[in-house]
Length: 121
Length: 107
Image (cartoon, rainbow over all chains, first blue to last red; front, top):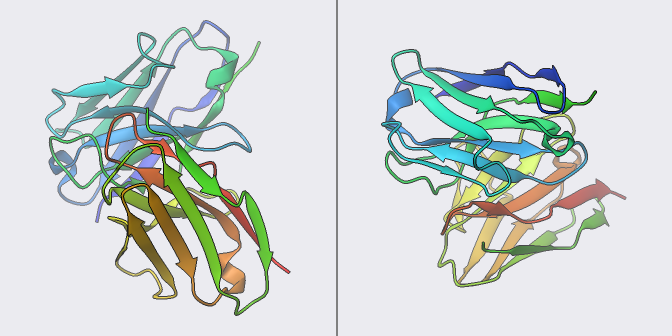
C-alpha cells in the first residue's frame, strides 16, 4: 500500500506563493489518480484539485481555479501543488490522497498526514 | 455541486452504545459514498467505501448502508477509541464533496 508524506507547508504572505510536495513510497504510484484536500483549522474538508495517473487530466475547485496548479512526476513518485496569489482563506491543513482509479478523478480516498499552510502578513 | 447534508453535527453516547450517523445527498449518487474517521490532530482514515464495503483492517463494528440519496453509518458498539469526527463523502461527481462532520464523544 502506498504511504504518503506531504511537505512544503509554512507561512506565506497574502499574494505570495508556496509549493507543496507529496512523496509516495511503495509500489504503483503511477497507477492511481491523486488529489489535494484541505481543511481550515477547526473546519470541514474541501477537495481542492485532482490529477489522473498519467498526469494528463486535471480538475480544480472553483475556489482555487486559476491560482493553484496540480502536477505529478511519476519518475519521482511525487505529487505537487503550486499555490500562487495566496489569500488568508487558503490557510488550512493540506492533505494529499490517492484514489483507486487511474483515469478517473472521482473515488474514495486514502490520505497522507497533512501539511499546514498559513497565509498571513 | 452535490451537497452532502450530514446529521447530527455532534452526539454523546456511552461505551457499548449503537451510534448512527446519516448523510443525505442533494441528488442521486447511486452508492458512491465513503465514510472517514478523523481523530484529533490526525488525517482522515477511510472506513467504508461504495456505501457499505468495509476497508481492509477496519473493525467490523463499523458498517454503512444506503443508496440513491440517503446513507447511514453505524458503530454497533461504541468504543473509547472511537472518539473522533466522522465525515461522509460523495464521489459520483466532481468536485468531490463532504458532509459537515459528526463529532462523537463519550458520555
